[in-house]
Image 1 (cartoon, rainbow, N blue to C red):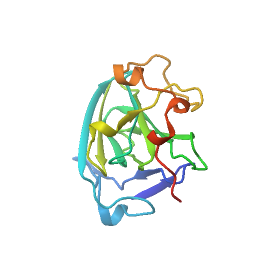
Image 2: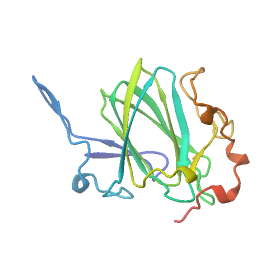
Image 3: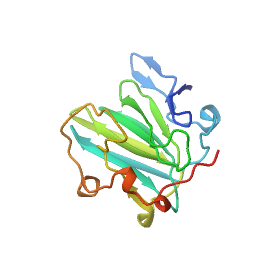
Image 4: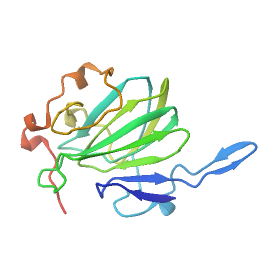
Length: 186
């Protein structure tokens, strides 16, 4: 597996080695020994699957203060624009984001560590997204940020998106009380 760095050092794009022949293809979606690297977990406790249609934007989500989640995201069908935002108070990259195109064709994975908000926008007719999580879902810690917060300056590739009521009502980063944001620990 190749680890491709992003401009936010903690976030990685992972490219598996794919074996293709006339029958189709095979690749290891996760192997703790082969994927281990700086900041990557060796164990996951929850596996989520989401199917969405074109223009659906899910996010920007994070968990705090209990059960902060790291997520390893991949796409089994379709294509998404996947985004991670550093929301750790005191981080040198606070409020900055990084994005990656994930698709069934490129088979790339995106590591979003705890302390980052995560969201994705479906660019294909439908997308089947899967993500491994380092902590279980915790309703009381479930948080969201406004997807179109001008301070984050995320250049989403679609102007019109479909949101859940929760995501549509999410606050701007500047309006989130400091105690509801993770703390940077170098």
